[in-house]
Amino acid sequence: MDPVVDRKEGINVKKYRLRRMTKSIRTAIGINCVGVYLDMIQYGDMSTKRS
Image (cartoon, rainbow, N blue to C red; front, side):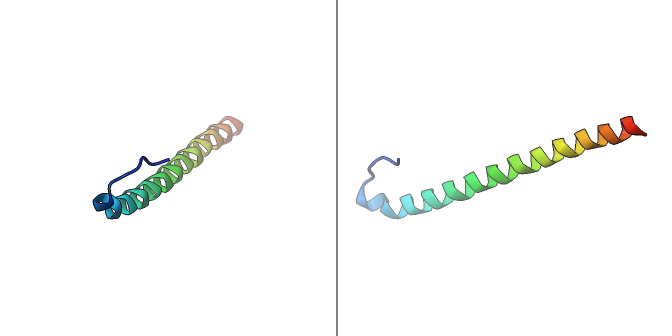
């Protein structure tokens, strides 16, 4: 979990957590995109081998 932060940095912590969430969501989407892309390449190779 996040370390204890001073009261003056409380607002920044919220922003940091939000940014962290968006970052993790972005990385998750990126991983999914890469997975789909790799699947497409594999399927493409399979289809080319078949024909």
